[in-house]
Image 1 (cartoon, one colour):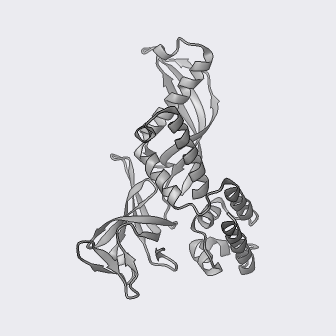
Image 2 (cartoon, helix red, strand yellow):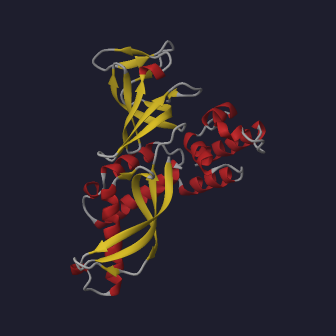
Image 3 (cartoon, each protein chain N blue to C red):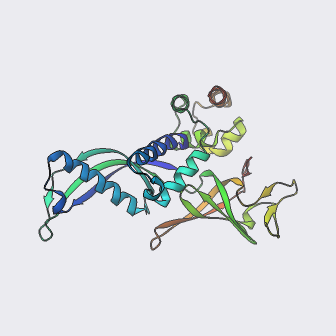
Length: 176
Length: 114
C-alpha cells in the first residue's frame, strides 16, 4: 500500500554550494534532499521511498565544526510503499518455478507464492512453465494475480523487503 | 490509492522530462517500477474521476486503509468487497450491505463515465 508520510530530515550542504544568493540556497537544499531521498531506497518502518511531495519547513542551518558544511533540519512530506500482513493486492508473475512463483508488486520483486498456498493449482513443466487448475485457469509469467500477504521480511543488507503471499481466500487468484 | 499515486508519479516524471533529455536514467529503479505498477493498476485515469472516487469513499466513515483497498481493487459485488476488506463489517458500523452496494454502484458509475 502507498503511504503518505511526513519526515524530518537533515540536509547537508557543503561549503562550495553556499556562496550564492539566498534563493539558490533553498534550491540546493531541495536538490540535495531529492538526491539523498533517491539514494535511501527504503527503510524498515516506512517502506520504499518513492517521491517527495512537499517541503513543509526548513530550519536554521548549523555549521558543522570540522567540515565547514551546513546542516539544515527540514521537514517534508513524501510517498512510500510498504507491504502489510493481511493486505490484498494485485501483482504480476515474473518467474515460475517448480514449487511456486515470484511476483512483482510496485517496487518489490521478491514476493513468493508457494504452490502450497495456491489451492488446487498444479505445476505444468515445459518451455513456458505455468500453474494450471481444474478450471484451466493459468498462473504463468506476466499474469496478474490477486493475493493476500501472509508475511513480510525486511532485509537490512540489501535494503529490500521480501513477502510471502497466499491465494487461500475468496476472490483471490488470477485476474483478467 | 494507486490512482492518486499514479497522478503524482506521472507529474514527477514529466518534471524530470522537462529538465533533462534522458529522464529514465535519472530515476531510481524503485521509482520506475512503482510508476509502471501504478499506471497499470489504476482503475481511474482522469484526475476529476480520481477526486470523485475519493469523495464518494470518504462519505462512508471508512478507515484510510479500507478506502485505499476499495479504491484499488474495485470490487464489483458486496460479497467481494467484504472479502477484500473484512473490517468494513465490524463493530456495529453503519455499513450494512445496502450501503456497501450503493457505494460500489456509485464507483462503477464513475468508471463508466470516465
